[in-house]
Image (tube, rainbow, N blue to C red; front, side, top):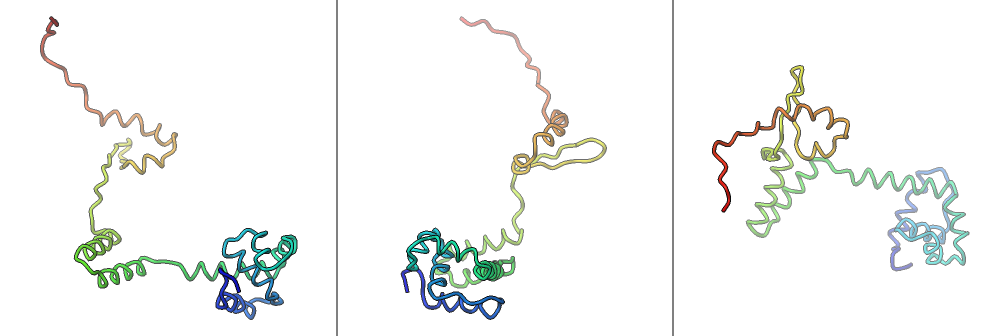
Length: 176
């Protein structure tokens, strides 16, 4: 059927027909749609499916049935790939048990610990007394995300954090 399209792909597409209330596509339309959904440009998908011009395929893309199929498949794929903290934890445990070396075991353990917040935050941060009894803790990432207006509001309070210059005792020595 083509380098990119397998019979299983066509069957997967056809499994949507009973779930939507539209007339099924023709085999050529299915093939063009699958090429398109695999990332081919519309003109290229039309050519690979055997259409002589891309205008016919553009008409297919505008059909309500085609739009419904694509929307349904996108939603199905989106819900199928949803990842939670529990699934990632399970994946790290599996990586630990399949590890071939002690180094791989340590890496999986380290990632599990990071995921579950077992390492302390080592990011340098500054606590600013913002007046009226409120304090603000800022690290570099948070400061980068702040707007100019927010930074300007905090600027007067930053002077409290700066150390006062220390006077230097001594005398000036002339250069020779």
